[in-house]
Length: 317
Ligand SMILES: [Zn+2]
Image 1 (cartoon, rainbow, N blue to C red):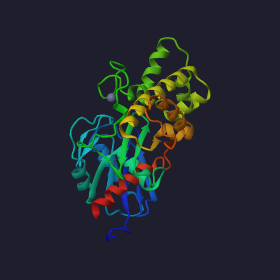
Image 2: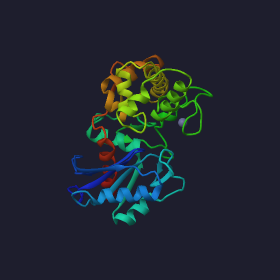
Image 3: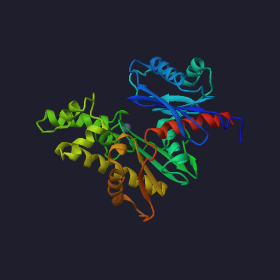
């Protein structure tokens, strides 16, 4: 056991909407937490907010791990497509290390989320796992042979950008036909807006206003689906169809025994979502495996915090 094993580390989950920070012990338990809206005015404000949140925790951690919604390769953040006004390349590790005077470890947000589930949640003890994070975008991650698999450039597991429709809908990544263009919340809202403008009746935007959200969040989707709103039902079915095609093809390549569905939609819809994803996937799988399981994340928002914290702890050993 390393000399740091009993010390607390901090895990940071940088999302498109919120930044969540937790103080995590050696058993992967979150013992204190803090959260703030993600600033939209660029990297400096994001880094300041992370530093403030870490500083507000009950105890000073010995290291900080950060999950970033971008491609992270050997500690460098290559691209951050889902954060507003993040246009320049920023050495997040060095900049945050200067602000906090602590060692910093970086990882991709979907990767640290699955790492958290693998250490302390729905994927505990399972060696081969695919994680699918359904939120603003569609994130993905892989654990293979018991270890997080990042690939040659840190970009492995990006199920959201598996193309399911040649020359299909425009994706946030700039290409066409990606799963995320059909199943990411941001794109689904764009499509719903267009359908409403074309005369289709939907309560999605009225519900959004009723619950006081700035956008069509997972909570809004849940309410609209519960009401059988026709546009919500149709877009959700399209989303699941697209995800099923991508997942089936991915399982044909990787043959993992467990798929963990996480993110905001999984939290709101629960195991029913995982069951529907399994049903949408089945027609595209070459070798169906009766033992293959589709489950929702157990740790919810804490998955990213726990996984990011473990990166920080690993960096100390
Ligand atoms: Zn894409």
